[in-house]
Image 1 (cartoon, rainbow, N blue to C red):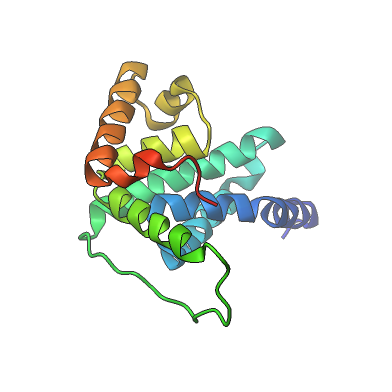
Image 2 (cartoon, rainbow, N blue to C red; image 1 turned 120 degrees about the vertical axis):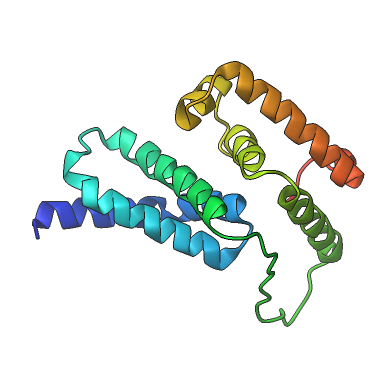
Length: 170
């Protein structure tokens, strides 16, 4: 294996895996599925690493692989809602219950969206991508992005009206 390849790839994974995991978690709604998604995307990126010349385009490539891989997984498997619970914390922070409640409401509301609607919202509001960028990433027209985002937000409001009063989750 080329030492330059290994060093460059390792540095990329160390620097960007946290951000990639956060995006994967928002796409999947599950920690373990998010880890699998990042690992799968990085494996596919490693196979193409020598072809990726522009360092700034590498992360975009990995994220695009993640989006397509997640859509592919949604199509393949039946939608069974599983929620993993980890070890309970020894101490609960003040206000923790409200934050947890809102996160659960958000998770449930996002689960009611179609895979495409969820991807659009993640790209637009978490990744802060423009409508044009989203259209290019997903291979659709800008008008489709706008209408999907509008419909997704309306569906979220219907599924969880209590989210309309929330400004930001920690």
